[in-house]
Image (cartoon, rainbow, N blue to C red; front, top):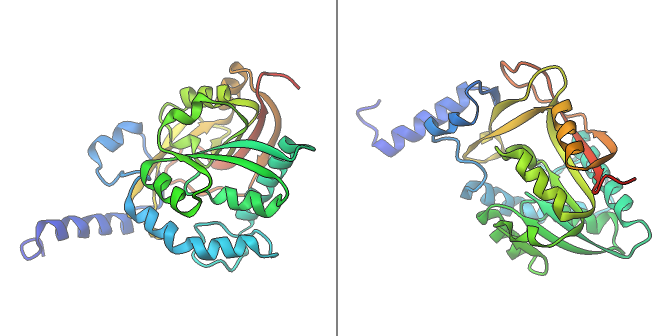
Length: 278
């Protein structure tokens, strides 16, 4: 087989075989240095992710704008519903947005790692009378696509968004992809005048923090990426050190099995008030 395939097809075949033979989620004992010798760890800034987002955007937008339960995600293979984790995540976001807005008619939001702005559509559906000054920070390909589908909102692919402050800063399914998570958390806390929401965040209660890989081919993404599964106490201690006052903890019901992990991962969320005041 090797002698009759051109090199690029052989490399693709090896990558496909590897992704089919390996578990979707796996503990990586060597940590972030694993990416140095594994070129398949391409992260999120790849065209296949944007292609999937583009293909699903119209159906996602239509489903969000309907009166149906929000029991689906933008990654759902078909928007038929029944995804309780997605429903919990959407309703948790709704609680957070309502808590921050109070009786105000407008607020500013920084969606850190917000992709192409899916949560802006959710905010519009949940609070149609709330005026949202929406800012999204993501990698270049996703930020460019977000600016195409939501041209009236603000998208950036660098940290210039942190030069101002927001009523709500949200890192939803994103903080654990930062190797230097402590530094990122600190900068997000500084950008929040009111609240910081860290959502859909993989944590472990009974083991030290560890690194895992997710192989995302099942979602149509031709990529793999590393992430943290942090020890819950370690994360909360760092948040307290930064002056973040915990207001509410959330659980979504999502606990993907990570092969050979030292502890069971569970996705949780936290709403903090910035400035360590109640």
